[in-house]
Each structure stands twice: as structure tokens, then as C-alpha cells.
Amino acid sequence: MRLMIVGQLEGHISTAGKIALQRGAKVIHCEDIIEAVGALRNGKGADVVMCDVKQNIARLVRNLEKERIHVPVVACGIGTNARDAVKAIEAGAKEYVPLPPDAELIAAVLEAVTEEQSTMIASDPAMKSVMDLAAKIAPSEATVLITGESGTGKEVMSAFIHRKSKRKDGPFIAVNCAAIPENLLESELFGHEKGAFTGANARRIGKFEEANGGTILLDEVSEMHPLLQAKLLRAIQEKKVTRIGSNDEVKVNTRIVATSNRNLEESVSKGEFREDLYFRLNVVNIRLPALRERPADILELAKFFVKKFAEVNGIESKEISQAGIDKLIAYTWRGNIRELENTMHRAILMSAETDIEADAIFLQDSEFTQSNNTTPVATQAPDPAGVGSANVQILENTQGVEGLIGKTISEVERDMIVNTLDHCLGNRTHAAKILGISIRTLRNKLNLYKDDGVDIADAG
Image (cartoon, rainbow, N blue to C red):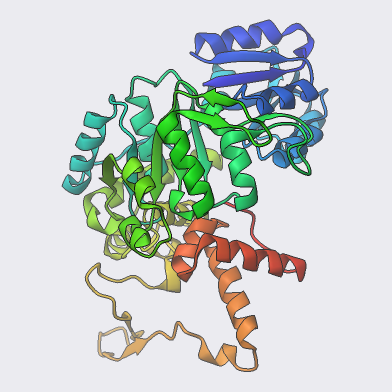
């Protein structure tokens, strides 16, 4: 773990640093937020920033967002001043840690904030064979292409490969190629010099340089523009990058792991993805099975998420009722592990019983089907007599056609996109997959809706 400490923390800086070092962290210290942002911009990466509340935390968070630097901020202050804590959280800090530092408290906060969701659950035979392959190739230097449907855990698998590799002590840098606008992605990957383009107010080190000695994850690499694919291919072949606005090449020693939820061979045949780049990335291919293909893991994953979100929300964890288990096992999980995670987060919050009841487990369209059945589910009508005499089946109308009358096609499309995004808790990649459109198309439509004043869920 890489920890950046910002400010003096009234003399407690050395103590906090020592605690972090004892926990295996690499620590760097910056005097103020200007120095901190500059260090991050120039490749001094961090997994978490601990900042003195006397610093302008709101400004720090804004500057990080402006620079597209995704790192959680933990505020620190003397004592347990409630006003300072609330102010820091409102400014964008993830946590508040009182000082003088308590070793166990800091360790717990750092672990919670920097958690990579790296727990690999693989009880099902279909997943065990995948884990065996990943463990076998992890110590090599081979480029790895991880494929599978959206939500199957490709980024988690990437982190697993890094932790099992010879580069485990180096940085693990993830870049979501689908989430960054194409005109900024080149700068994100390779960096730029001051004045290279409008808005380039200072030199910035790219992710390839930041990942030097470690691993870089190119998440959803299939969304990369063909022109940038050519530059990526050269970086892989030559092991050199050139910052935008510079003529000097910089050597990089970085292992590449790429992911895609598309059929890249099909994309190659359509001319959407370079064939030579595909072969460079696909030295080793790991295909993650969909959750419906590994049913033995569903319950174990569900229990893991229940415990996790109970802790996050400060509530008591619960077991899952047998009716709830049956409901989970029977569902098709089109959104895979990500959908299961979101479902169990809602369930632990909504549950009103001793064990999580079936009604607290909300599934898409309020119905669940057997994995081999794609037809609508017929539900048993209530039996007012209580003697089982009613045998009428009611087919739920999930389309709501009547509610569409009077709306234009564009309004129906807008409502469908916004509601799907809300269901996915703001996750753009998941929503695009469900809607059957590219992440770029989704992003463009959301920008139009925002301009019209529509409330859009934050990215999840």
C-alpha cells in the first residue's frame, strides 16, 4: 500500500508514518495540498491520502477530480472534534481519524478505504480451473487478456494476478479505457508536457510510467479508439512511451493485463480492433465464467457481501433465510457478481426480519427465473380461503405499456436509460451492458440529459 500524508498533523506525522510503515505501507510526505497534487501528477502514486483537517480538503478533492486522479482521502485532526469530522466528510473525505494516532484504528481505516475487493471466492469447479490457470501464469511476464461478461470480476482477477506475480511489490495501476473520454485517454496513459494542449498547465506522468516496475490494467481495452490502439501497440512492442508534446521517449518496464467484455475476435473481423494488438494482448487468455455458470459460488458470494455491507453501514450482519437462498440460486444474474453485490447491499438495508427474507432481495423486474428458463414467471394467486383452492396463475405485466402512452420515443428512451442506471447504482458499464449500447453512447446520452437538467446517478 502507498500512503501519502499531507500536512504536519501537529507533530504526529512521524507517528502516523511509522504505524503505516509497520503495516507494510510505503509512505511519502507533502507539506500542503499543492505539493500533494503535484506529486501525484508526476507519478508519485498513492493508494490513500491522509490529510490534516487544517488543509483545504475540499480544494484537494476538487483538484484530484480535475486531474482525474482517483485516490481516497482520509482526514486527520487532533481529538474527536465532531464539527471538524463532519466538515471533512462533507468536503469529500472518506473517513476522519482522530489524533494522536491509534495503531489499530489507523490500520483498520486504511484497510477499509484501500480495500481492492480482491477476495477470490472459487468453490465451483468452473471457477477453480480458472484460478488454477491464473495462479500458474501469474509469476510469468506474459501479457494477459481477461475476458468475460460485464460484472464477472475481471478487475479482481487482474489484482489477483498482480499479487501472485514477481511484481507484487510494485504498483498496480488500473485505467478504465471506457470511462475516460478518448481525447483524454492518450494523456492518461502516456502523460503530457506543460502546454502540450489547452488545459495542460503542468507536466503529467502517464499511467505507464506510474506503473513502472509493476502492472498496468487496461480495463475494457476494446473501447479504445483505433488511432490510440496503434500507439498502445508501439508502447507494448518498444517498451517505451512518449508524452504528448515531447519528442523524448521514456523507457517503461510494465506488465500489461487487459480486460474486455466483448468478443475481440469478432471486433477484429469487423475492423473495430487491430488484429496485431489483439495478438499482442492475447498471449494468455483467461475467460471468467458468468455467475450462472458457477452456481456453487452464488451463496458464498452473497454471504460475503452481506457481511461486508453490514460492516460498512454499521449494522448487525444477518443470515439469509432459506426462501432467500432459493431465490438467489434460481435467478439468472445477467449482471453477474456486480448485480449480486448491489442486490445484497440493498437486502441488508431493507431486511426487517431476523434473517434476510426473500422479499428483501429485490431482483430485476421483481421476478426470478430458473437459469435455463427465459420465459416470464407466473406467480400463484392469493388464496383468500386459505385452503389451497385457488389455482389461478397471474402473469405479472413488467412492461407497463399503459404508462408509455402519451410519451415521445425520446422520452421513453431517456426514462429507460436513467432508470436502468439507477438500478445499477450509477455503474455505467453495467447499465450499458443491460441496455445493449456502448459505454460511449451511454455517456453521450447522459451528458445530453444533464444539459436538460435531468438528475443523473453518480458513477458507481
